[in-house]
Length: 342
Image (cartoon, rainbow, N blue to C red; front, side, top):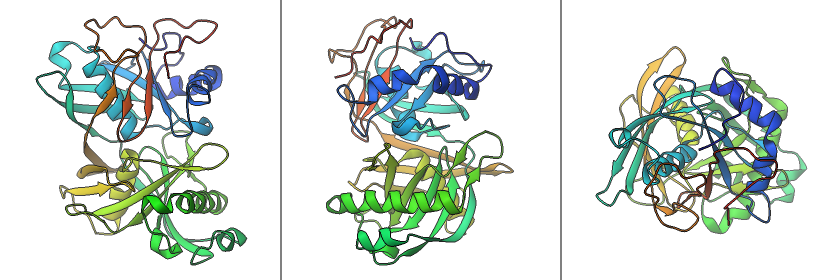
């Protein structure tokens, strides 16, 4: 399944082609009445690397197309395994191809065919801006924040993250503060885009394009807590997951600060308490190489809720507990979209 007419010699070029010619599919899937503000879409396309078993382009609200996303990787991997879209001998270890490059995946598959967990290796992650001060102006007073200036770091882990300590603005990372967190996150992100624009050294991918507030853990066994604020074009929205690419970026920042060693386990919890477990497995000239594991609990595998017996299905949707993510695959592009999203 997936887009079979996307042009490009590699996945970054295919991402660019989807953005330019096929963005209406993102709008159909993510906007009302089919979508909702926090939904993402993952489009399966033919891979360009010999070692890749499948490839995908990630599409989010506000026409954001990340180079790589952790929870979208988890969703795509789970769907491929549970919907029977991989050969039997490639269900537990396989390679996805994202616009950032290859993503090795390991799936812990139960006897009933469902995934207990997904482990993936993220892209080389690194810090671009350290300890920068941004002025939030009158917006900080309007939101009742504790300060009108805040220190930020900007790091890449698949997307460009503005990273700030929630306590510096008087925010608590709890669901009850969700409205203030998302509004403050948009404010800090816009100020950071204005004052500290960044570019990826290998890809035409400017930033920052997303934000993570950090704080201490609130549950036993976690090392840190975060709240990731994404844009949808008119307001901020919160990621229910600890955010895979965000965890990659934050681990890179902690390593740069000397607070996280290679091979050291890092348990990251979200604003609602869901967890990803990560570690940095290597350091290269391009950055540190992160690896993450998340328990995946799919709610729906197909439009009927039944697992297909054949790999020839033409469309499928999947939702994850970590974040509502749609996987939409089609065998052929038609003039009008044929969707099964509810």
